[in-house]
Image (tube, rainbow, N blue to C red):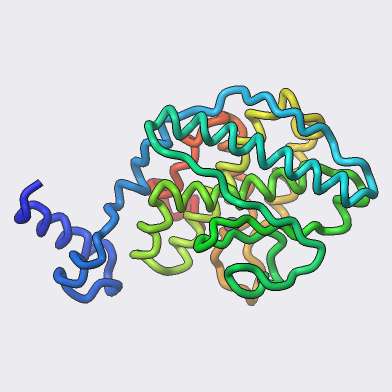
Length: 257
Ligand SMILES: [Zn+2]
């Protein structure tokens, strides 16, 4: 691509990015990530298919067992995404995972009190807060779904989607990221649902829960999407076992409200 063409690309991007970038010179210095990285990422052409995952089930009441379960699910996430990245001809690397009993400090500062999962981009580390209720009940799907969602943020980092999103700050961008992570989670869960007990029979409960309770709360920033859209994207991923179902970046505004 010649320099002239490149200038036009940058100029076109400035309109989309609004006030974020002050001048073409500054834009060039920051090496703009084109919108197509989010809207037409090669990962959307990939499929997990069936992933054999021997995670088993956590034993009710045992934190150690729940932790061991999450470590296994984390390995299965790497298997699924490695497959997807290979299909897309992209290089994959797994994130680190830290499971905590209390929300203390992370490599990105304090674990936010309103979240149970957290991903730190700088250190590529997933933080999972082991909430007592699913541990008590031995309800593995809670943790698998949460972990797969946070893993989705790691994928967005590797795929350049996050880098694009930083150029378009705001709650709508945040919702497109979050709902995509929901969808990635659903797609992964479907791929392992034949080999991990406790997933397939509980997904309807999860969809209902998100529809009714999973939306942005009054008083908090509208950065994760409403309940019906959280249920919609989780289910969309689930129905295909494919990251291709998860293009929130081309979805109409009403689907990312
Ligand atoms: Zn998230």
